[in-house]
Length: 96
Image (cartoon, rainbow, N blue to C red; front, side, top):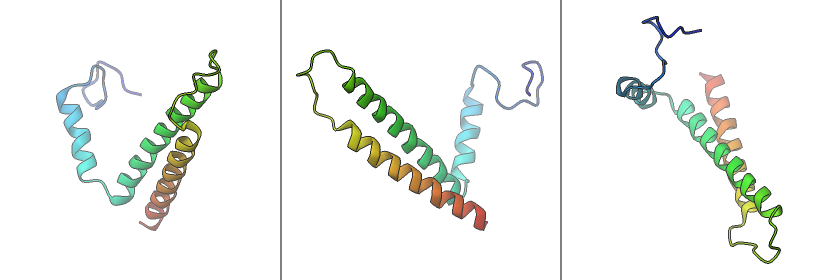
């Protein structure tokens, strides 16, 4: 675990420009499988947000205020894309 007083810790709070650039540098030279895993994680996060939108729609008090975004279909689509991306990334990382 990193202590805030040590110099070797790369991820201390507050984040600085140099740390953000090192993360961008790591992503620039990451493998295709790693980039696909990051993309899959982003899609799963978006799917969770869409699912929360559906939960919020189901708990509405005004029964006629349905809205126009198909949250359930959107969350299912985003989850499928994210799961497929993570599966392909895992296969790529296992192959080397």
